[in-house]
Image 1 (cartoon, one colour):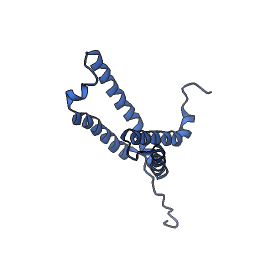
Image 2 (tube, one colour):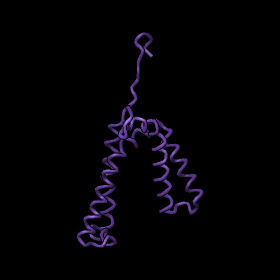
Image 3 (cartoon, rainbow, N blue to C red):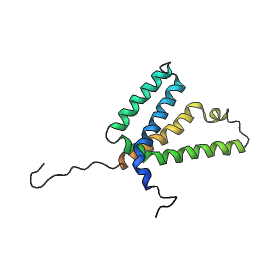
Image 4 (cartoon, rainbow, N blue to C red):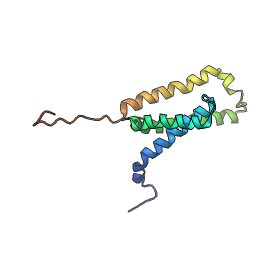
Length: 135
């Protein structure tokens, strides 16, 4: 019987979701940094990087393993910012409280830890050896 919370069907669309997620992140970073100074080149470069990441073996598995933890980290940062706003801090001055470089490291170190954990926890391909032929 189908229920509203049955998410089994969504597993078939994981590749599409990962493709969209990687494309949007790469395109967004290129737009913010304005690295290539052209929106068309940004889109092309994002498409190529997305194709390389998603179509190579294991890229989708690592991103799928990382996604829940990155969402938890983003929610934690969001709630810290909301708490600081309730405490009366000006959100524009918040990076100056910790230091601008410290804010980058506070986000980068957990993302690196999440990457390492996802890399080790992602399902690995196992070699199957036929005992009769040894191949």
